[in-house]
Amino acid sequence: MRVCVACGNALQTPDWRCAACGWQAQVVDGVATLLSEGEIAEAFSGEQIDNLDAVDPRHFWFAARNQLIAWALTRQFPHARTVLEVGCGTGPVLRSLADARPDLALTGTEVSDHGLRATARVVPSAALVRADTRSLPYDQEFDVVGAFDVLEHIPEDGEAMRMLARAARPGGGVMVTVPQHRWLWSPVDDYSGHQRRYRRAELVALARAAGLHVVLVTSFVSLLLPLMLLSRVMNRGRAVEPRREFAVSRRANRALMTVMRAELAMIRAGLSWPAGGSLLLVAKRT
Ligand SMILES: [Zn+2]
Image (tube, rainbow, N blue to C red):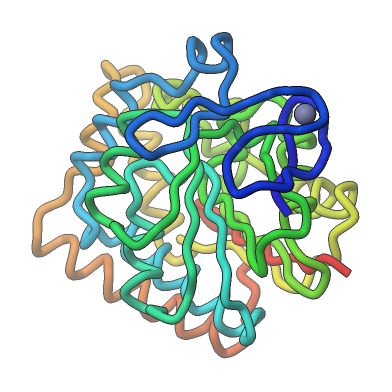
């Protein structure tokens, strides 16, 4: 069900109006805005979202991550029909899910108005709501709730994880990707506004504290980890040029994608990589 972000009571009517406390969402261009003035002011900056625009969905990192997400969702939640993605950015994950699983009903939330407009263009079938991950208006509403490279931006990640768990239906669950290993911290993390990179045990503890049962956790971008480290060392002391992190030639991209495919094949075969640039966690709500 949908719940009031002000008082927590169930919303009884299809519009975003609370009969209990009188709270009402603003609807702008058909998108319900559930943010307070303060939350709008501190929203993810337009510049960071603009950088996401520049990312090609064929880029090996994004392409491999999206394939991994679609696989894990189908494998762990074979009966899922409804999926919420929080912090959907400009919509690349929703787009990839809409292509891979046209049977799913997709919903996205995002604080950035710019991100929502971009998502509406690339995934016209998705329902969109402007909401903060720390105050989601859902309780037992979706089969699967995903947050892909979102938690590391949020100071109160425990609160965010509880909101993800609450939004999932019993029998459904939560899927999360985050950057891994503190020793991989680089100027790109500062530039991206990351609060932290995670250790596996930290992420698992976060899910358990939210009452979730962890069913899959693996590192990914594991085979390319030595390359990531090398790039960190070589760029130490140099001026930050975060866009370079994403800039690869078409030929290099093909080669890196081949490595990522090999890695994903091993994850599909049951391997949980111990180290890697990112972590995927899947957890169920009982
Ligand atoms: Zn209310």
